[in-house]
Image 1 (tube, rainbow, N blue to C red):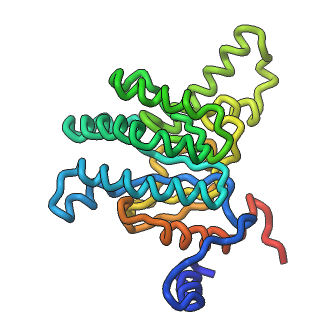
Image 2 (image 1 turned 30 degrees about the vertical axis):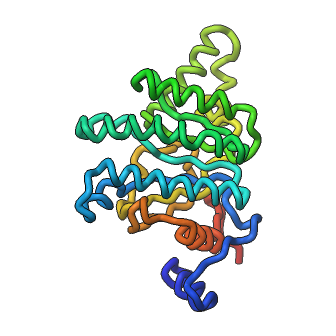
Length: 259
């Protein structure tokens, strides 16, 4: 069934145009978001791009609560890529301030909800204030056993794979392992998401249909959903809509469809 047909059927069944969350065994174990469209959301409202990023943070807050509450194991978000440093200086500075404000204001609730934070990306490029906030967030949540929240900052998927390859090369050079011992599991252990399931569902907002160097290794068989809605307008109901689409898909991982 095509996604559009499924959506129409679900809306008709609900009557009020509202979706409910699928049963837990139909949910992805690992969901990922490319949070695109903040700047365009602001532009349509005659606001600076920084206002769009602030609004996007509010949307993120609701999504983290919802994903945690429904029992999804891992959630990865693309917050700032290695290429984003090329944006206008004013926007980059606003994003840096937003990072600090977010972790200062949200860390206590994330700890209360038992969220475990992993920052994916090279932190040395960040100003000291932001780097300190990020390191402290990981340190304060490292013992938590609930939702694993992976936040990609100064991140690139190719760079992550190169990083993992270097770690394996160092182990081989030190005699800790042999080149013949390198397999997919060994490479996976070098990723920021080591020990977590691969991405089951990747959702990108904002209308573009590409993965933009995000989780190239972990998303090898992810289901993809591209939303036209801008990230600040993505909410709990949109999430449940997408989770219902995901639950309807036949994931074969290269196998022939059962007759």
